[in-house]
Amino acid sequence: MAGCSEFDLIDRHLAGLGAERDDVLLGPGDDAAITQDGGRPLLMALDTLVEGVHFPADLPAYWVGYRALAVNLSDIAAMGGEPCWALLGLTLPAPDESWVAQFASGLGRLARASGVAVIGGDVTRGPLTVSLQITGRATGAPLRRDGAHAGDRVWLSGRPGEAAAGLAVWQQEGAREQARWQGLRQAFIAPRPRVALGQALVGVASAAIDLSDGLAADAGHIAARSGVALHLDPPRGRPSARLLRWAGEAEARRLQLGGGDDYELCFTAPREADVMVRAAARRARTPVRCIGEVHEGEGVWWGGEPILDRAAGYCHFVS
Ligand SMILES: [Mg+2]
Image (cartoon, rainbow, N blue to C red; front, side, top):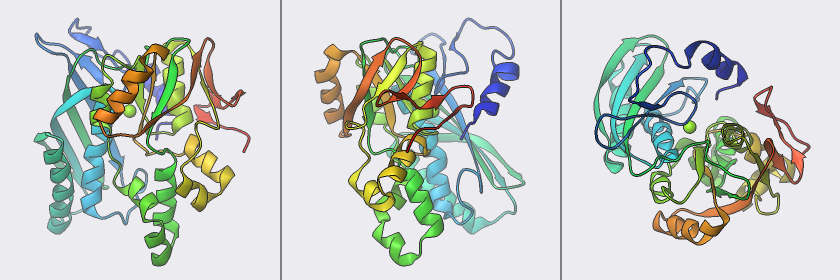
């Protein structure tokens, strides 16, 4: 959900804050920070969900808890790490025990399934806000945003755009339409962080990011950090059939490139690694497809047209 002003604030005031330590291998600017103390590097990330901003006010507590962990797992996935420990900061308007029980049930179920222990945190009173800090272990050299090279291919997991459509279904449609578009709705409510895929891509992918702000903006982070251009190919990047059915061609494309909350992985890999990428995807039981190539230059391109306005931090494109 970060727009340019948030990135500017981080750059101007928050990047490189505090002491300089040589056990910090990577600071702000990627999906997770990397630190090291002796053994394997540790990956650390934090995400905050605010009611009405990052999730609708009528989202059941179970799914608020699930999402709070899922979005953090996704950042560890983007680095190819193994998620291990989480700290929870929960701000509640009132001490509502049944809400907290449901919230804990959603969070706890995903945490058990992904091998994460919730080891502490804080509960305070205020507008409903969930912050979760996650620490993971590197499973090899962590995947980063800055490793893409001209000549690499660009790959994508899953079906970006479906989560943004699912949020619209959740907010706008009646019960019958909600049932009809259940698959889209689930894409928003219960994103599946690609932890297994991220791990399988360690040593294979040259760069990776998870999609939280939309394919165009997030691919733009790989382009900017790697100093390259990502050229995406419309026929290979076609939206999913059900997204096309729900939204129509132009809107499906807009949601695919500009919608957020997908938590899929966009990654690059050398051409010679095609077979290894497909083997990694099979091992992780995750669908991936090649949607373009890395060129010299900058920005994100769609069918030869620039689609990312880096100055604005948002994408705009001809529909
Ligand atoms: Mg991320």
